[in-house]
Length: 292
Image (cartoon, rainbow, N blue to C red; front, side, top):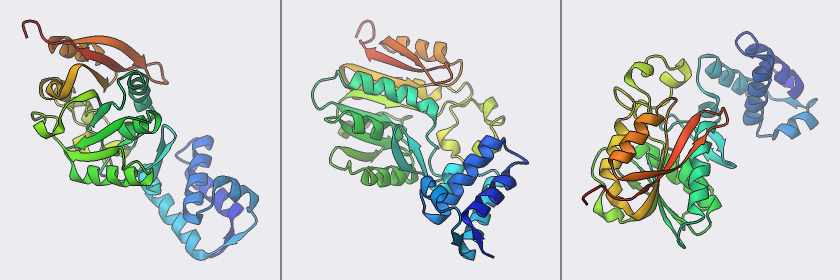
């Protein structure tokens, strides 16, 4: 089987139309065709009458099948863009989402006003997306990416190398549910997008999330707030006096997160919304508990 790039694109788009909007079908077709050919999307347009081999046709067919089965595009491509960075991803890590730009932007804004060469911990880092975005924008920041999952850390390490940030960014295994290891030292800022899906909500997730993304990075306990309690209890000791904590949270969780922060000696400095105008992230400063 042989076909032109234009024919392949049209066939792929047609294949997605029964389940997708015309815009999403076109988006999927362009991205998959670019992936299997190794051509940028503008090159596909310029070379649309070029005939491609049967192996390319079969590769596109295979990848379309994965999408139609429900696998997210990011895992099929093996990469995803976040905050201007192209990141390697696989099923060991969550796909970086636009929602997380809220806490990332908030952390970057605060980090720019920290002391020179601030130490920043990205806890529950996954792909490393937040910490790497901070390191790319705050040029003197020294960032530590921490996660319980060794598989996730392997992905984060690839992304450090991919963006040539090994001089300022490192990885360490750490469990947010346990006391912060003493060897980590003290940080000017801790930022985290922890698991925050409640037990009830886990069963309601779309198939593309429920069946493909790691449960370890999603499930936040009965009310979704287990990790906020754990981080406040276990990692406040890893903050310098007056240190900053930036957290992403789920829809409607702001009151619960605020209560946890206040009960653990934090003063909320700022809230921020995502691009859907949903309250999504908070920045707080540790002031110490009363009587300590």
